[in-house]
Amino acid sequence: TAPGISCLTQPGPPIIPLSGVLRSSYGNTSAADNTRIDASSAQFLTAANVPLRVGGGSNICFHGAETIGQRPPSTDWTTMHDTYAFEVRSVPNFTLERLKTFDYGDGITPDNNTTNWSIRGVHFKYIRDDCVQNDYVNSGTIDDSFFDGCYAGFSARPFVATPDGSRNLVVVKNS
Image 1 (tube, helix red, strand yellow):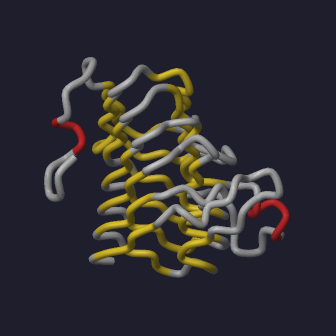
Image 2: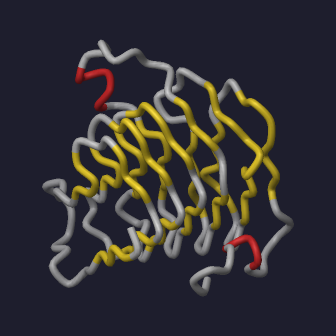
Image 3: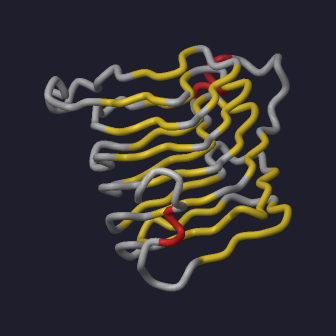
């Protein structure tokens, strides 16, 4: 999707709307190619370790939402390290835009098959580990985003089984 244009405008199946205060997690790991999820009027208030999980086909768009963690500052590191506001599973050309997140271990973690991802217009605050955990060292773009109070704004520490990511590039701009 071109800069300044929402990924919701891309062609695809009908938009999946999410709205209101949601007290349970949302997971759709078998989404079709070009799925668009509009959560611009949704707020996730759940103690789930991962309130948002999306996967499946390629070119998936997730737009909007607020995720507000439920763990106090005294929560131990082991517990926090296993929380993610957003997990992406096997989505080439995934786009996340306009997500606001507060109080998680990690902001977003794209897995090994989430290549050429794009994160734009997001605000991650009080993230106790990585705002973007790119442990599979895939290429991606971070644009027009604000990372406030993260232990690390961006990490790319490959797992042992991860292929060599030296030919991949992550671009950070306007952030």
